[in-house]
Image (cartoon, rainbow, N blue to C red; front, top):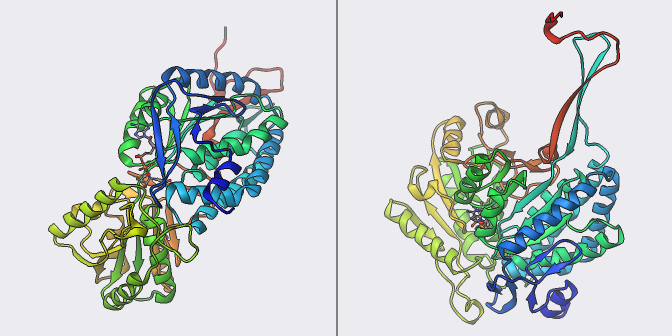
Length: 513
Ligand code: NAD
């Protein structure tokens, strides 16, 4: 691709885009509300989107309900075949979609491409899974009886996604939901709707060729209003929401009030522990990637570094040599490692957090500035910051979605470091660097890390799709992607079958009449 407009046209993005898609057809949007999408990389207008109206939302839900009636009757491997072809289409469009992710969201190209690769991987995973949606069989306590359980399609899965993984999170949910026989209504982040529009264009041909009913893969443009409507909507049995803890609490409450299912993937406050037995060469690579990758805007970004005091000064010195040399700039350029923050609000939050943590006693060691000059005219480029701090500081307890790394010292055994690591409300990702088995096993033990993800000698970010992804406490408790996360997208049924001519009751109960 020579220019961004080549990329856009190859993905079906026009200057003004539709407000919703039902997979096969597009709706124009009659809410009268439009939103201009500017790239955080250079501030240029990429395109306009129209927000869907309430009436259009209802139309999409009705179409999805109809589609479910047919889609659930398709054998799962046939649904898997559609997902296989979607994976192929994503392979064809990997470069274009990865570039658009980078341009609309601001992550570097390598990470944009990586995000699309993750979509391809989950397609492959889902295809295999489509032949193994298995339950257990059990032995009955009654003669000539057998028991087993099965998993049936659930209905509409509402997917609310965040700006920082604008397309991968959809695919984690949508591809599993699709093979499970569910239909999906996706509400992407209002900050990154164009990548969502692009995904719908990419899959459209596959859906047509395979005669997939209209309404299996839906997408609707809107902000929190549409998201909230979906959370309250009894026609949507499962809401999978990715975003801030603040959003998750509202969504969880709304879905809980109607006894729906919610899968919440919320904020993290992830730490790496460096013990005196850490391999520092490896550790520093992981720390820097974790802390400044995606400009600190991953849910799994490394935010806290808990360092044994015997190696504290060395780690600090080495980080202070690396940070000032990090290439910051246009994420589409190959040599760049740190792109912009998503918008100016994010920059304000970054500056405010640094200001407040210093008031609490934190010491800013490097970074923390907004870059100026022609290349940085958007005002969204910042220098990643390192702050010496203590775990109980208010700002250290919060997730600031920006590249701030807090250095925290510990002096005792690994248990002290684990207590610091667990001493926050969030529970997404964690890791330890140590070559001592006693330390690493303590970290992974029942009394070790309380996070959904606990790694040894790798960083906090960059999970593979094969494992279940998610976290505990304020991170929301949901699990998506690999392992048996698919079960949550289905309704579970226990079956007891009597193949005899008597009717014995369980627990030996006698009921004669
Ligand atoms: P956000 O909470 O501002 O928005 C996320 C989505 O929720 C958007 O689509 C938004 O429109 C919608 N939304 C907001 N309020 C809502 C409401 N009341 N009802 C329904 N929908 C609502 O988050 P963001 O700024 O886009 O993303 C950053 C956050 O996402 C960070 O906290 C990050 O840690 C988290 N995140 C978590 C994971 C994970 O898997 N745990 C992954 C990516 C991002």
